[in-house]
Amino acid sequence: MRLLSQLVSYIFHPIFVPLAGTISYFLITPKYTTLEMRSGNILPIFILTIIIPILCFFILKNLGIVKTIFLSRAEERKYPLMISLILLLMILLKVIPDHYTLELYFFFLGLIAATSTSLLLLLIPFKTSLHMMGVGSILMFLIALSIHFERNIVVGISLMIFASGLVASSRLFLKAHSRTELLIGFMVGVVSQLLTLKFWL
Image (cartoon, rainbow, N blue to C red; front, top):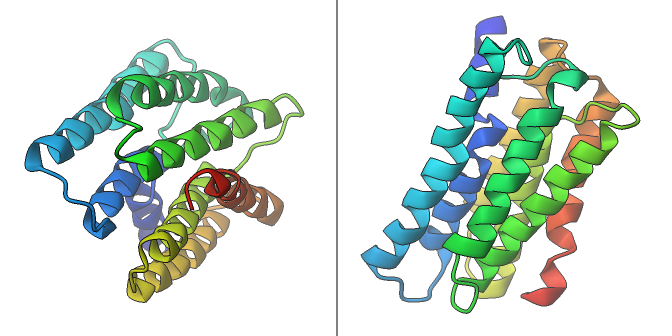
């Protein structure tokens, strides 16, 4: 059970959320998108949200600021969240053409709001579950895309609901978070996406 919980924690690590949301968008949207446009979005997002954060993690680990990729202590989270916030802002301002991929633009705006909220909660200090924030963001984004484009993706939404429960159970089993931290993390992800819907849905 421990091995399965650790595997789930790696597969649904929040580092993959921006890329997963981007790929989901291009799979669901009925808008015509060229291969050049898709790769022009996916590749920079992959580099900025996965490659660079991993490199930053190793630098922070060598400096003794963080210990594990799961940032188990609240004080470890400040710098990684700040780095994540800067990278998400770069994507929003430089990568995504908001005049065409409007839905994706606001998805990243929601991620920025969620990351900022998690960063502010550290001042209490409160350790929000970033795993649950990630799955909550993706789940709400999928529901919104389904309504917006009138696409039946109930299987995908159902799988994300199942994944949310699986992630929460795994994080509880590993004693990485309390139930409150998991619930707040999920709500931060969902509400951050909900607040952007009036601009594009």
